[in-house]
Length: 81
Image (tube, rainbow, N blue to C red):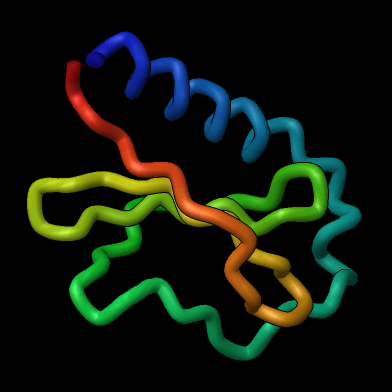
């Protein structure tokens, strides 16, 4: 599980550091609903999606949004096995 978290964070950091600046001119939604109990840990743009890593209590999830409309595309919950 720890290796999985490290891989996710490494991918997010890679995307942040390899930003080509094209997103600076793109329009963004004024608000994005992540949930009342969610604490945003990190957010980044990748392949036309806004990726938001959130913590809800003891759970962690990756939320995918359309950056222009703010509509949520999907959610990936991280679970231990």
